[in-house]
Image 1 (cartoon, one colour):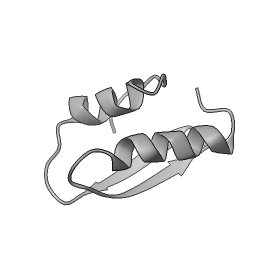
Image 2: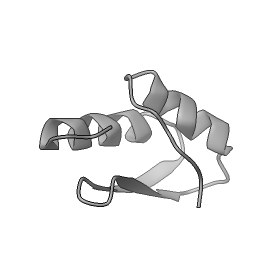
Image 3: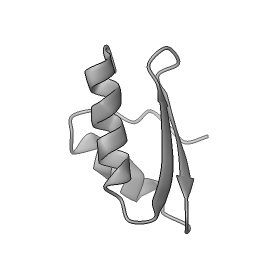
Image 4: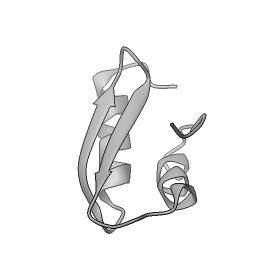
Length: 61
């Protein structure tokens, strides 16, 4: 999981690397990432982007 601000920045970088992502808000305290998209992006694409950096995605809300 995310344990520091470096983790937060890495998750942001991973999500912003996905085409169509317009805004990312990552909360270290909550262990969450909120993503705003310009177009519909399958959850699996976002999940893969984060997991490539070694983080586990627990679910989608």
